[in-house]
Length: 389
Length: 160
Image (cartoon, rainbow over the protein chains, first blue to last red):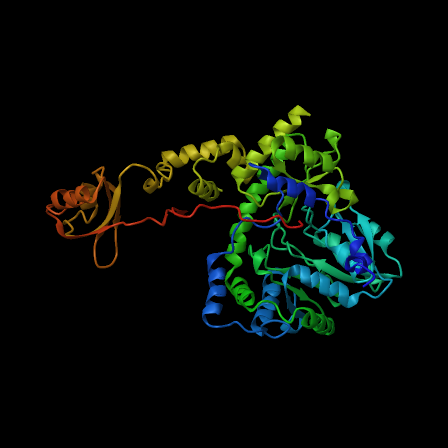
């Protein structure tokens, strides 16, 4: 062997920058008494009746593979759920059950991307889109969302980013990390831009159930002419507090779903059977759980937004997900420095906004998937930290 | 709105009016007003902390007593219930459907004290037809609070 194995790895992968926050949280994990607002998953545990459905499936010996695309009854339940909650018209033939929303994103990217394609990724946003697009052979094209527009994707910005190589638009709303959402009128304006193009929409709607205004989440697939070109990816993690079950789904036009399923069957075979039975219970009996958790998040959302605003860290009102994204530029610190200093001096862990793309610089992400008491303690410490600056 | 205030306090009576105001998007004065009127109307009848006495040095025994009684003419069960709930040792009194009439929760320092209380104070009462005493061996959950399971944050740091 003349070459070291590590020198033979895929350079697209090895040249991806390492996670910016890994270092920060490695330090945090060695410290005592850290109050974190850093974690992006529900603090609730999965409702008992859903866990129990998983347990029952084991008791009944449901330990074998399911069909590649997932249990037929679960796929039907997903279609019925999308109809009931968001007015979307799909059947089980449009649904692929995946290992979390993440797999659905990966499968959708790899199924569409050809070498040289471009994938438009609005930022700040969840960190996986660019790297997954790159691994599939595409060039990620980032759109910098602007705080002054409420971190929304505007038709102008979209239009400017589209080229004849654009294959996919990632539409990550409700948004992690900003909490921004897109209203129906705003989606219509985006649809108007897309209508004259062949761009496919990858709508990451994992936070669709967690919106806090009177309007419910609207999927771009419900706008005329968009369903035909949209892959919705979502899952059970956020709505039902089921992160560890690793279960999500992709919903797309039937011929597309057939190809996504092909890829999924080679890489994954099928999603975990136990999780699928639990998810079936969640879809059929879990609407009330969503409402209970949503209400609790909403209380905390109001507490944390007012808390940051009162401290002088301006925070626009997040309408979805469970994050707020206060502006820390008034401190004169970079978001990295702010988070590191805050951790060292007051033992509070936040995520630097720059980790979510360059337009996140000057902001920090604070999760409110924590108890009200915990949030208040963290805010007190941030206040002390600001007073010392 | 009223029920929302009550539900928040039902989960955590230590929540401040200021916090409730922020959570519900109303003023602190409104929250205080509502709480005052809840108290006046007998809707909020008290508040207390939940203590797992098993973990303290205090000796405490809890028993649930099933009582069959003869209701009195014109007064139903209310007056009998009153004769029970006036005792400090009696922590809860419920009128029940089913095979017995009243359920009492009684606390004492030890089994003997509780047994004597039942034998000497409750059983001899005129209206009492029969009693059955069940001692509580362990409290797992009370009023929605887990007694033996400490909530802890097991979430690991993920990429994001």
